[in-house]
Length: 161
Image (cartoon, rainbow, N blue to C red; front, top):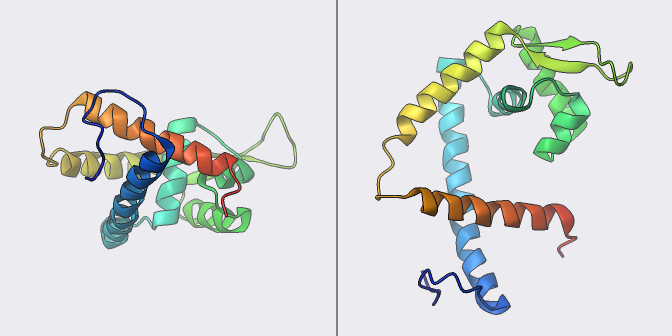
């Protein structure tokens, strides 16, 4: 790490902040790709593609959602999300139910099989993540989540060149 803030809580000047956030990007990209690969490798065991897993995970966390809501939450095209929902529905992991707020856009919800599948994924991931070492504290994780949340919000709101 190249930053000079040693945990004093002093906000970094913009140029130093940009440099430090570049360090975060340099780690997030490879981490994402490695996790993606692990999920793909587990597909034969769990039978869930990365896309289907993402849909099941969102439905587990947020309850029934429409396909457009699922797409917006993942910043993915409606068409791609619809294919993932169709794949999940073909395996009886999700089902379409009437949407009281909008007749033309059904809600997608987890079935009992879908809940069991995503719960099994989370159980396996939880067991693997318990092995992460480094004496990390709750404050360390809180800081990481805060940084990533701010970056995500910035890129949601900003038209970055």
